[in-house]
Length: 308
Image 1 (tube, one colour):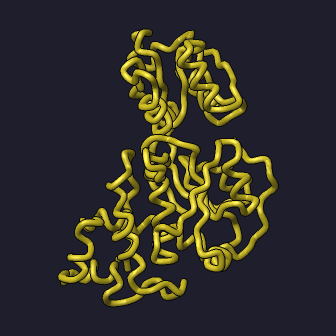
Image 2 (cartoon, helix red, strand yellow):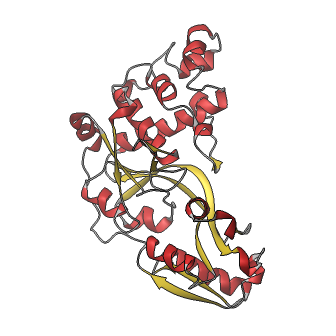
């Protein structure tokens, strides 16, 4: 769903973040595996780790990521208005969002797709069996539009019951007002995990629509966009190199691999242009880890760090 606020004016986000001493990051209000507080109130998940990686790169301290919960309806407005500095919130990267909102897609960090969650009691195991089904869906959203396109393509009839918030969709689905709900697979997995009895729900294998997810920032600051992009690349590259929170300090002290030494800032400072210390990528890995640590979706791959 597109944000309602006018696109933000260009500004120096990089300098503002440095001045504020923290990275303000929009996350979801709570989604298992992506951004959710644990029993101690500590926010955890893949989207949270993206924010922490940017803070570790910028300040050498992952704890300087301030997480601001946003809803589907408010996430873009929060970024456009300057309330947050970046958006890392299970957000599909689309042409419309890149071209119409005054926002910049900096990097896709995993690939997923819009799927379908159904009640097990319906004995449905394939999307082909959904002819005549009713779906609870977000009013006037891309999800609703994708469902309509998919149904036409498959030559099946579906009825969509529109709702204005995700909680009302979940409540209606759990109450049996609709046969199915559709969202990206990460959200559906979280919905199923949070259900009173997850075994009562089935996540169908087919995708309605494929989509990358990633990080967005406001237009107008190429430096800030680049730093957020390479902070994510650092997590990906660390996984490729076998670097983890547990072993990165020891490897940094002993390795003779020129690529790893360059990555960890031992032989050169690849962040000089941003005024970062040579070991900024080391701090990202030491404090946050790598993409395998929290991602359960398909992960982007990047070997650009050592490209000529």
